[in-house]
Image (cartoon, rainbow, N blue to C red; front, side, top):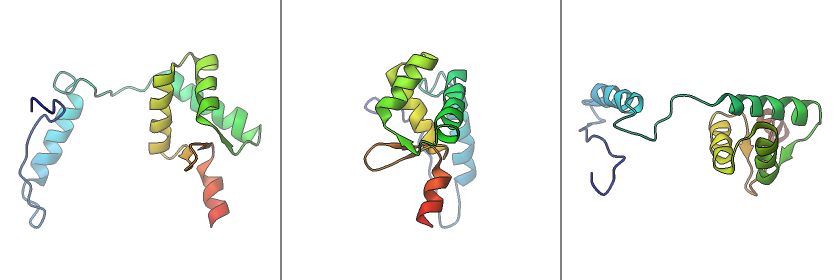
Length: 122
């Protein structure tokens, strides 16, 4: 644990019989909600992240008809319009991509409406 401070517990699980799964789930929830034990766990999303996503959805995608933007443009909008620093812009991008609200292309561009991409590929 000294080498890996983010490891907060060791749990034996046997997937064939599901022994230990309930204990694993219980300890994962406890670790996620216990900020003292896992200090980088965040349970609140800044309101500016939500405002940024709303702005991208309305101003760029719907009204502007823009399909995708570069991360640099994304970070610039986050900084100038919502006072979000570059590190937080990266975190917001990851959050939006993980939640399916944006899609990151192989070249790093961000698709503002992933459903449009899915429709094109279908």
